[in-house]
Image 1 (cartoon, one colour):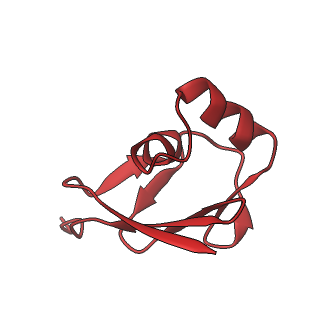
Image 2 (tube, one colour; image 1 turned 30 degrees about the vertical axis):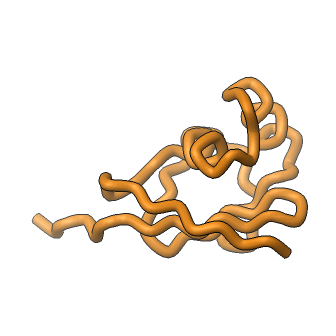
Length: 77
């Protein structure tokens, strides 16, 4: 499995956005297809919500690729 780390500046990023940022998909439409088709896992579990918030340390898996999100910690209020 090929692992890629993606660093963002915000506390979270949406699932379909991190897939595009990591070059797993060329378009949001293709990301949507993969997600709704049950081909995407977040932290080892199938996720069909393309707006799912991906936070620091979360792992997104598609086929033989794994993306690890590196993000700043959210401040507690």
